[in-house]
Each structure stands twice: as structure tokens, then as C-alpha cells.
Image (cartoon, rainbow, N blue to C red; front, side, top):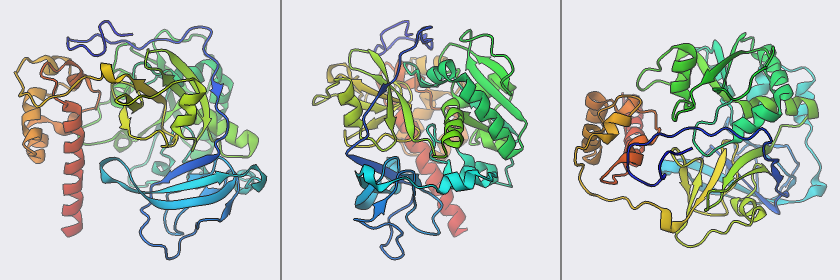
Length: 427
């Protein structure tokens, strides 16, 4: 709940809203005529490509571009490949887009069911990295950074998003079973589950230590959640995994249960859909369904000038086409009226200090932005804690000058990472 207009520019007091005791029932979106899958592998050459146009694909089959490439997608429907093409993601990330013409007569792939007969930890990376919630199971095999704690995130990180709350409120049995399975597969006994404060009581024994997180944004973002729940601070430039802690969405835990019970990798994603008037819906759509189909299911029109956002209003990222697919990590889909989109400007910082006052990482944002605008990214990191930013978006929210601070920060982190990667390659 916002104690002020979201698009105003006063100091905010934003709280996460609890869903009602009678939560919405997700509306099922029909399987798409075409499904689209994004694979984190560049489409570099057609030589030795495992997938080709017109090739038949079974439902739940792994889609991998090259034999040596670890990234893959799971086909949520069967059909024939219509297109394989290069795809440019955020910040120029090179990926591959596969379009599949749905054909329900293609049958189902049983590779996962065979592997699940005698499961081991490898099944997580071999078949389940594309579960709803996009779990980073590959990190469990990083021996140089062993994981000792699994933190199940049952609190939605952004405001106006109810996806995780819905799962923990309606699928407790599946969550309990998933925690037990994950313990058995990984050998990790220290499992914590973080839920919204005062949300649900009477969990009983679910195989994990229950912790409550504050209801004031951004308490449910991973780094702050870890500080609350475990009393540990994630150092600047580091990740929770560097501390041996792996956050995982509660939706992934429930999907893990579904996968083993059905013998098929779970491919149905729960989404919070926010209409332009602020009305919220829940959708259940197969991964790969185009965004247009989801919005059409609720009668939501997108007009010229409207903004389409993947995620919530504080941490979400823009989408530029209604033909983009639902992805495993997409917890929310938001349409914002063009007349309500705040106009950013190149007005200089006036040193009002509002950004400094709201920053949970205690960064001197008014000085940081000056270095970012000047593209002095290393100096921004060394002098003004660029890498301590947790990407909550509060600084942009309160900026009187309407500077797109969050975008400058995201670009700065990206450019700094590229520079460091280049230094490692060239010595």
C-alpha cells in the first residue's frame, strides 16, 4: 500500500499489501498457438546446431542450441520449430529466440520421468533450471562457493505483486514436500523460509525455519531479507551465494513438487497482472505464452504511449513488444497509462538530499549520480559505493529533479562488469 501517489515525488512510506483471506483464483490462459522461448546462448553459427526449423518438438522436451552449451529451455507445448533467430536482451545480452508452432499431437517427452526414477542432485541442473521462479540450481555445483543455506523467499520483493503470497497461502503442502525433496537431493539441511510479517500463522513443521520479514518496502528484497533473517550483510559487489546462501522463490519449491509428482518439468507460471486502473489479477499461463494472450484474457488493452512493465513498479523492467513471452522469472506484468508515466529529465541534481534519506544502503546518491552521469564508473564504485546499491528504486521514486537514477545505476554496474571481464581476459 502506498501512503502517497506512486507517481508523486515526496518521501515515500510504502508497505507491502497482504492478499485477502480469500485470495484470487488464478485465471488459466489457454495454451498459445505459438510459444516463444529465450535461451541464454548466442546464436553464433548454424554449424552443429541441435535445433532446426520444421523439426518436431515434444512437450517438456529440452531445447538446447549446441551440445556444449549448458543453457536450455523446456518446451511447455509440443509442436514444430517455426523460427530460430538471434535475440538481443537487456544491455545487449546475446541470446537465442525459438518460436514453436503449437501442435498437441506431438506427444510428450519422458526424459525427466526416466531421470526422476533414480534422482540425484544433477537432475536439478539437467531438467529443472527453467522452473517457474527461475531457480539458480547451477550454483549448487560451484565447488569454489559451496551453498550451505537455502533461503525460500515467500515474500514478494516488489509492491503490488502477490505471486509468492498466493503460492504460500494456497500450496503449503506442495511447499513442504518440495523442501523435503530439495533437502534430500542437495544434502543441505539448513533451509529457511521468509514470509511476510503477520501474514500466516500456524505453519507447523514444514522442514524449514520460519522467519518473518517487515512489511515496509524494500524489506523483502534478497539482500535486506538476508540481513533480517540471518543477520548477515552481503558485501558490496558480492552476491548471497558468496556467503553460502542461495535464495529461491517459493514458487520454484512448489513447482519442484509438481514436477516429481507428474513426471514432467512444471511449466505453468503464476503472474500478478496489474491493469492500468490498478486492478490486480492472477494469471496461470504456460511459460512461452506471449504477453498479448495474457492481457487479452483479462480484457486489458495497451494503447500507444502506455508503458508495459515486467515486474512491479519499483524494480520492474520495460517490455517493448506484446509478442514477448512469459519467462520463468516473470512474477508480474503491469500496464501503466501513458498519461501517468512520469517524465524524466536531464535537470541537474539540486542536492535536496531526499535520495540519501531513503536509501536503505546508506549511499550518498546525490554524489554517486554525478559520477555516473560523467561515465566515471570505477570512481563511482570506489568513492560512492555503486556496488552497494540493492536496486530498490527508491532514489528514482523521490527524485525532485526527476533524474532516472536507477537506470544510471544499472548502466554503471553493467559497464563496470564489462570492464572487469575485459581486464580478466586480457590480463
